Structures are given as structure tokens and as C-alpha cells.
Length: 285
Ligand SMILES: [Zn+2]
Ligand SMILES: [Zn+2]
Image (cartoon, rainbow, N blue to C red; front, side, top):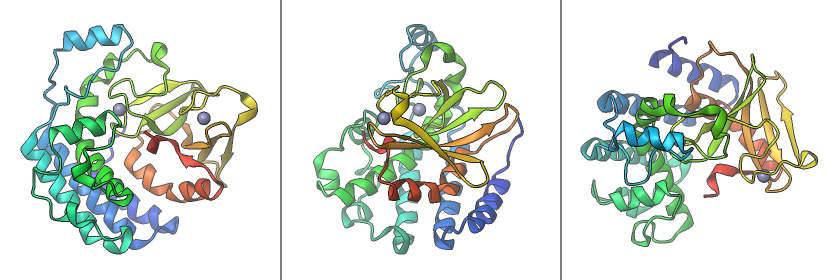
């Protein structure tokens, strides 16, 4: 594995982002977001698991997701700091994302991301109604803030647990570590197999090549993919649920992929997919 430094990631974001025609303010925003996440991961360090490794091994043996919503390895003071940084970033880029709702902008640290809200998000449920006031835009912002705040914790936790996953036996559409949905895929160059990547914790897991990762459809007449001009990416689409997933066309075992960077650099593919009438599957929780 080749390690990629933070500097290198930011340099690629800037250079490749510009090449792909992404708006400079959008790239600036992600630059800031990546910095917040890198700092957060340094502060978190090794995840302090809330469940015994023995219990986790037992779950792995029984082919169950390894972590439940009550067992997240969180450090609340750090979490509150990250959420304040994320909210400030969204507020400073209102020209890109629109004005942050007042209820989120003026929330006291600690009142927004309570354990109840975090658990609801983790289970894919809507947050309690007093938080996002039921407004769809408020909810999207809140979801983005929770996701960005929790990411560093979930990633540190996944790094501790990934080696326990039995890849050959799992092969489901949800993440074997946190139970989240995939938002990216890649083809393993050596084995020709397809892997999914968790939208929440970046865990990678083996999946069927010809199956929709959102509705499990295996009807070959309804599954297809497009390739970009350079042949670097694929866009898998399903005619049954009309969801799509982006993928790296080939990845060798010695290449280190930075998923947050890939997600940003392929925003143009998201736009194309949505123009064709497809939806980002992992948002439909
Ligand atoms: Zn996950
Ligand atoms: Zn489908």
C-alpha cells in the first residue's frame, strides 16, 4: 500500500478538480472539509470500541454487521468540536450550498447532535422533528452535517474492525461493519471482482458483479453500465429501482484510493446520471 499524504490529497483535489471543471468555491469547500476530517482523525486516534472484540468476532462468525447504533465509538467533546467546524464551513459557503437554516446555524454546541439524533441517523431514520422542523432542505443540511461529523469516528472504528469481516461470506448490499449503504464501487483488476464502498465509513466489501447494490435485482436485462471517455470510471444503473452507483473501472491491489477525493472528482458523473433520470441510491434510506 502506498500512503498518500494529506498534502498530496489536497494537491490532487485542486489540480484534478480544476481539470474536471469543478467550481473553485466548491473545491475550496472540500479542501476545508478534508482538513477538518484529517484534524479530527488525528484527535480521535485509535477508536475505543464499546463492545468487546470477542462479541464482535461472534457477530462476524454469524455474518451480522459488527457495530450497532448503541455501540458507536464516539468522543462527545471531539464530536461537538467537529460539528461546530462543519456548520461553520457550510455557513461560509452559502453561495455554493444555499443559506444554512437558522435552526442549524444558531444551534448551541451539543443541542444539535445528541445521542438520540446520532442513533436515528445511524439507523437510517429521520431525526426527531424538533431538530430539522420537518423542512426537506433543513433535513438535507442536517444529514450532511451529521454524516461529515460522524465520518472520522466511523472510519477510525472501521479500521479496527475490517480484518474481522469474512469477505467471501458477506456479499450483501449493506456495509459489513456499520450496516450503511454503498455509494461507490470498484473492479478489482487482478480478480475481476466487484467491490462496494460504504458511504459512511469507507469500508470496502466484495459484492456480485451483476446485481444492483440497492434493490438486489439480478435481472441482466435491467442492469447496465456506461464508461467515461478515459475508461477510468463506470456508471452502473438499474432499470428496476432507477438508482445508480459510480465505480472505478480498475483498481490494482497496490493502489491506494482516497474515496472522499474520488467522490468529489466524480461529481460530474452524478450530474450526468441524474440528468438521465437516475437517483443516488444511498440517499434513499
Ligand atoms: Zn460502513
Ligand atoms: Zn436496483
